[in-house]
Image 1 (spheres, rainbow, N blue to C red):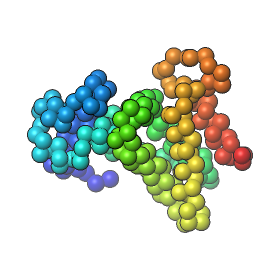
Image 2 (cartoon, helix red, strand yellow; image 1 turned 30 degrees about the horizontal axis):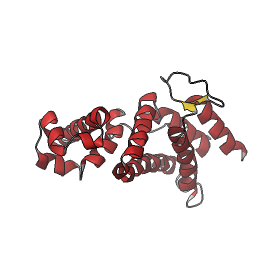
Image 3 (spheres, helix red, strand yellow; image 1 turned 60 degrees about the horizontal axis):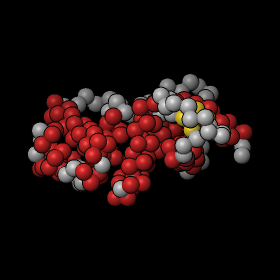
Length: 203
């Protein structure tokens, strides 16, 4: 891994602060309840600095989910794959590592905000696509040349489709949430296990 320069570290730190500030304001006041000027004053940066990192406050709010999940680069962790491990098993291991309770809560909160503020939706999709791409790249890193073209893309897409249904639905309980007791309610761990069992055994 290439060591970051002091300038790059400062730039990434600024990215984090601006993203998190916008997210906190959106949760507290709603997306329409604050302006970019409010955000930069609170974060103690200029509008020009904001424009160097984000195109709009919607982008900053959405990207904050990655920042809140231990960092823009840290969210894309690598998995050590033992010899003989199947791609699906490696993706299951990667998913359990990435989808922490914090990330799941923030993603669900972001999707709920997007229902109220449709201008947020394109940026939510970018966040989900970034995570899906990271999963595919992790598979490619470990299995390049061993499977037909498109295999890792299809596999990562199948898993992320299931994860999205978890975030949009209310019958899957994310760690830290109270049990609602609704019919068919399951924990995230149970749902994830069921998802991978279906993928392993065929629908």
